[in-house]
Length: 205
Image 1 (tube, rainbow, N blue to C red):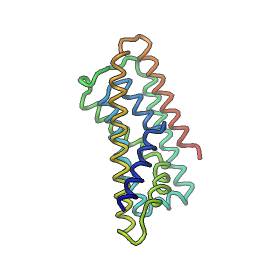
Image 2: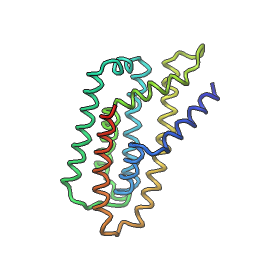
Image 3: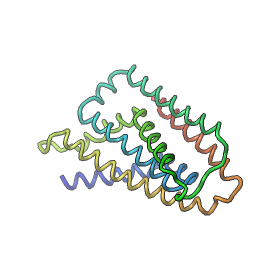
Image 4: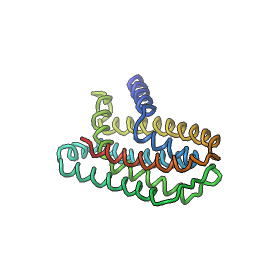
């Protein structure tokens, strides 16, 4: 059992550091605004994984997978939400506040909720968990649902630590270039592209 958990943790680490929508979003927010903002996003994304883990553990993931209309409806809702955020960024000015000391609790909470919503409205996360977690369930051991929750917990812990590390490193790097006149507009459009890219990725089968 211990060897299986270590193998799963290592596989999760590889997935977490591989370029993907989640860690790219954490990276861009950390560079644009500061480490605390990136960690807030990461915390929201990981919190959403609690729901996905529960869906798999309780068997609802199969219902979502086998009902095309339900799956597509969730995808559409997720894509619309992300495009809405991209539009809000587009309409805002290009100024960006730097530094963790300026990270207000209200803005951190807002980004935390965005992370949760992004995660919950991406049915690919549920289907990914449905494909991944059962592969590490050990027969004739603890009940499957308990093992699913244990594996989900490991996934969330490893991912949170990895994303937080990305946020901290990206936040530190931002301090070296925050005085550049081109940086704020560039990050504004980078965020827009990232949100649109995630929306498109959700809709692609």
